[in-house]
Image 1: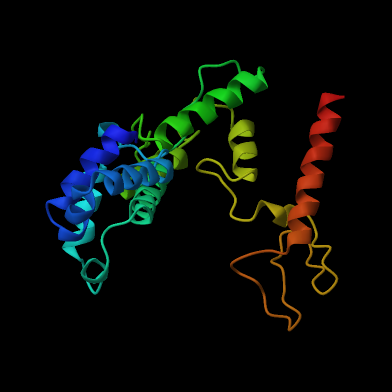
Image 2: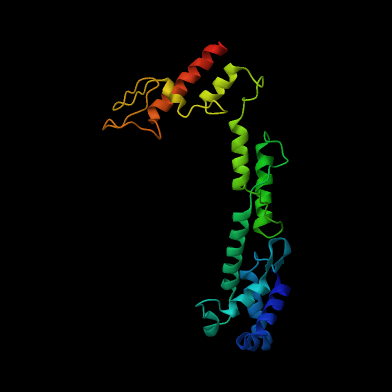
Length: 231
């Protein structure tokens, strides 16, 4: 805000607070107050339609004394009240913002980063609305899960070998719950054989998960197979 914005804001506050009205009645004191407020609130916009912000509304809310806040009874509104209100509003804007994909070439790191920073700055200063992507609702998630589950089930859609391979890595109708069963478990207290579930130290079979070491061993096995095929 500049001096004109601050003067208008203080005149508005004076309509609801006689303490500020008395301050603004003295020209010398009014000038000093406007100068001090301007220095403190230089980075706070007077209004930002794109961000839904209006400093005058924040002054009004201060005097509405929400909840148990009775600050307005003991002191007039001060610059730090506006700073706190804008900081909370800005944080809410940034929480709603998701960085859009920059138009810059991703290989041009400086330009790519500059575009992201520029967009965030525009949102944080109230010059641009937050870019929010709609989350997938539960119904759509179920629909997508159903589509994924039938991958490769249509006759002739893909060779059986491909369907089986997708199943081994957890995709499609033939997905295996624990594809790592294909290898022995190297965990010292388990040593489960191929196609057998892992076991806890007590000997109880694990039905909901497998050991990390077995998962890593399976990943290494797949990597080795892919390397052999590529060779």
